[in-house]
Image (cartoon, rainbow, N blue to C red; front, side):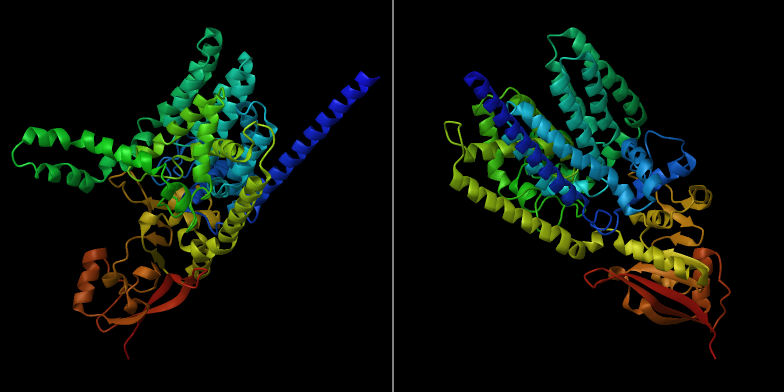
Length: 591
């Protein structure tokens, strides 16, 4: 009876502990959903142009089975000429069908992927930390509150979907490597990241080769794991490697900045007055690229990028906040020490994952880059959890230092409070300019005013404003494909829309455009001349000659006519600054 009672006691303690851990995991997941789902369709306010393009192409596929160019179910979407990969667009078809074409539906895929990645991090942690529930829960909690991961889970991020795919593939590999079927499933899911984000065309194959190497002692398992990934990789590369990937790298390579190449090679050679061979040896494209790579790689690990201000892309970070919290930077180093001091069996996998995930950003001219190295996300949370374990646990490995734990808890709570205040209160106001809410207001206003004008002309076609009109109006894809007129491709492969029915997109020539009547001009407030919003031009022979020369028409104007420009509407940002001016240009006969 005593033995039975003792056994029952151990079982009861085990069940209580398991129930507590499940409860904590549930709380973490609820926190995850709240941080990523609260006002998902409103913050960030408005879409960036890539989100709008993803949403509209999903809508076009849903309606017609073709993308915006008329390609039937493509594996690479031309879009602006940046050639988007298919996974996120196809995954968006269901939410667009269910919720309509809106900001929430486009972001919902990333929301789901990011939220599930938190749970996958917990599962990876259980393998990494010898089934330690506490460390695994801590890793999941850290990822749940990480600024980098929260933000990318709230926007339509292809990198976030790819990170989810990699994490899921690794989980299935770690838990199912004993089974040939599960290895094949893991291989397929890992390859899904190749269909999601261009940066994974470099990172995922390297990680896959490492996982493949771990199976080297079982040739049958190795072949079963290798075959699905290889076939699917060949399929996606066949449609992107010599088109989309090449276009991407042409614009993003170090050599795209021709002046910088000239400055660091030819100009530096001029300083060598006597030894031309040494000048060419030290200052050439190879040494230039090598130095740029090293610089970009270490910048990606710098505190400035990770914890102080993040990258330079305003849509990847919020102002005055890094990708991680300040406290995480030293904790990451402690985590590395913990991994190797405890000789955890997967320490080399985690290290390889981290350092190869940086490569897609490091090989581009605008590194460090938050999206291109987003694959580091699960690893950083695991390392931070390991670091906190090291800093708070007794040297004996039993129990925790209560004072240290309390101080760290307060620091984490304060940082989370500070971030949520910045993100949900200040970020929508301070960063309104970098998102599409101004375009949303503009589209609504232009639709109301369109019947009053012969033509509506908008500035800066290189910003792809057309996509916002397609998205927010849910324009019929067949109508768009019939009516759209495009510019020719630029030198980097980008292509923009020049005209769609009454809408015309061109660089405004204020000298001529203010003399053409019956039009509405849409300009960015920051680049609008002061006299454009309220002025008049008297038509004479010179004006008529310039109009006929530039556009082949005099638009019914005669000498002595007066063309008047008048501001009819201003689109304001949330901080009160004007963003767009809508200026009507009309003819007024002189009395």
